[in-house]
Image (tube, rainbow, N blue to C red; front, side, top):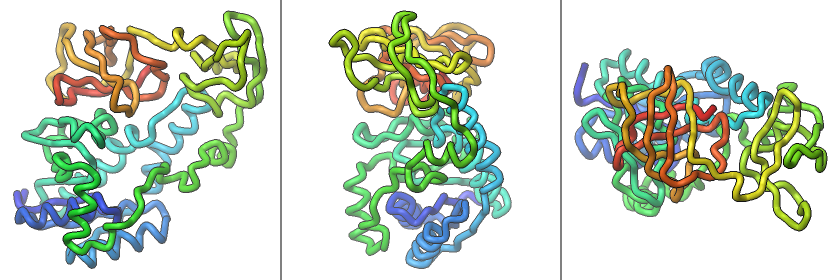
Amino acid sequence: MNESKVVLGLSGGVDSSVSARLLMEQGYEVTGLFLDIGNAAARGDAEAAAQALGIPLEIRDISCALEERVCGPFAESYAAGRTPNPCVMCNPAVKFAALTDCADRLDARWIATGHYARAEDGALYKGRPENDQSYMLCRVRREQVERLMLPLGAYAKAEVRAMAEARGLPAAHKPDSMEICFIPDNDYVGWLRARGVTPPPGDIVFHDAVIGRHEGIHRWTVGQRLPGLYDERKLYVGGIDAARNRLVAVLWEELFHTEVRARDFRWLIDPPDAPIRGSVRVRHTKWEHPEATVTPEGDGVLAVCDEPVRAPAPGQALAVYQGDRVIGGGIIC
């Protein structure tokens, strides 16, 4: 493979545009890859970015792969009372798979994205604390990380925008995209309804007593506050019982757990055969990151945290770190 060639995921946004320019300034031959799901405006942005950068652009329709590997499981998870993270699902199965396929075809050694994390010597690390996205990458495959470049890992978002401005890139002032790519209006309940995922109303129970009704379990996730007060106390969703179509309400202090299990754990190191020490994240936050003992259990792990974590939600990812290094990720069960 050609060590000077890189295939970069190019959306046309500021992150991927600056990533391309930084790689070019380091002497790499960059090819952009736009992952097309039928959004003509997004495709136009990618084409404009590639033209401004002076790089070739490959376009790949990933609609079928996205439906099979992300959209379908996303809908099924909500119907089953889980809260999936679509980016964690998509990165290894769709985005990075498409990048490596394109790189193989072009004889390129490297793949790259605009994520705010670091990839060094075949290992994955946190980015800057203010915009670290390593959690979203915790389940990428080891062979993908071995080919990965992440040019923005050392930078903060404000610095990246300044670099785009200084280099005259058209994406310098483009707003950040905050929504799920396949739900552009951010109305996931409406998206689920359009797919026929409409669980019926059911009971809300608190300490085994029915205290109210919900409008469908797909509208809720573990940790959300329930409206109103119960005996002058705030209540939260502590569990979603899909089999009985009910929400289990708890007090704030009952949301915290020291034990978190994850299935389908994907290691970025040689899988250990005994408990190891590390730290964990159960959601994409900057502040919850307790130390823990992580024990392999079949295809999953049990993490016993030194300090309780708030509302680990089934379907979300459990990311495990040693220092700044990501050593793997699984799905909370």
